[in-house]
Each structure stands twice: as structure tokens, then as C-alpha cells.
Length: 192
Image 1 (cartoon, rainbow, N blue to C red):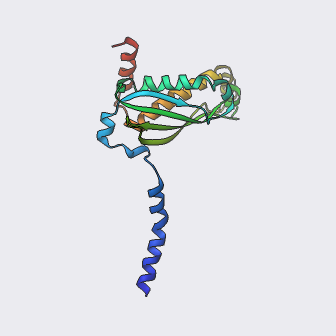
Image 2: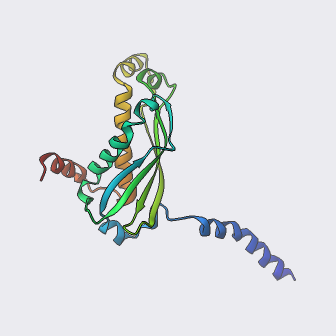
Image 3: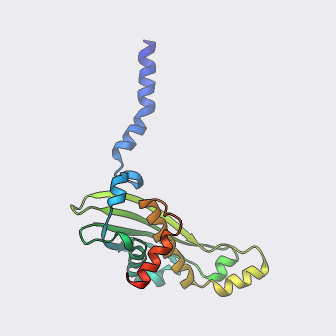
């Protein structure tokens, strides 16, 4: 009798974990090492239809679709191939604050979007939420003044895009080797 109670308790303790594992789709590390090394991207898409645009975010509602797709294309430039998969970023939150608010510690700019990889057959292969921030509060009065003057919304917006694209690459493919990103950028600029 005592053994059955222990087995039942163990079963009940493991049940939530088993159900959670059964209900989740592919996420972050769902790609094997072989899939990561062979990964090629045919298209970069951004969906902002369900996004929550805060503070200065509404100013960028129409731009982010093109701008983020371009940032992702630049970051994955060595992985593009017309027969590859689709990379899609679905915007959750875009919060772009100005330099004064950031410098005084009243806010940070933030971009949250779910990154999805979809294979040629239309199957979802990976889905990863990714959040990046830009801007940090200054600790001195001089730093606050400089931050307020130099930290415009456009600069924070650009930082969000570049950081998101870089973090997406790291999340999907792993860390670059030292100097690899610089070589990739130089190759993009020279067109070779």
C-alpha cells in the first residue's frame, strides 16, 4: 500500500512537467548542430500587426518592418540562399524613449519580438522570444547632460535593431569566432 502511495505522489509530481513538455512547440535549441551549420535563410519577414508601440514607438510602427528585416539580412548575410528557410520576427513591444528620459533613469528603450524559423514546407522549426534594450541611466550630472544631448530616439531605435539582429544570430547559430562579424561586415560593404 505504501509503495502505491509513493508511486502516485511521484507520478503527480512529474505530471505538470510532462504536460508542459508535451504542449510546447519547438523553441530556441530545437535545431540540431547539423541544422545550425546547414541553415540558410531565403527571406526575412517582420510582422508588426500585434505589436504594442509605447512612448516614441508609434513613430517607428511603419519603419520597423523594413528596418528590422534589413538588420537581420545584414547579420545573416553569409547565410542567405533562395532555397533556405524563412526567418520571421513578430513584434511584441517597441518602446523607444528619448535621451533625456534615458539619461535621467526614467526609462530604457526596448524591443521584444518572437523570432521564428519556418522551413520550406511551412513547418515551424524554432520559436524564441527575444528582448533587447538600449540606453542606460547616467550616474553623474555631466553624464546626464551629455546623454540627453546625444541620445536621441533614432539612435536608440538603431541600437535596438542592431542588437536584436546580433542576439538573434547568436541565439540561432551560436557565438561568432573572434573577428568573424567584422569580416562579414567588410565583405558586405565591399560586395564580395
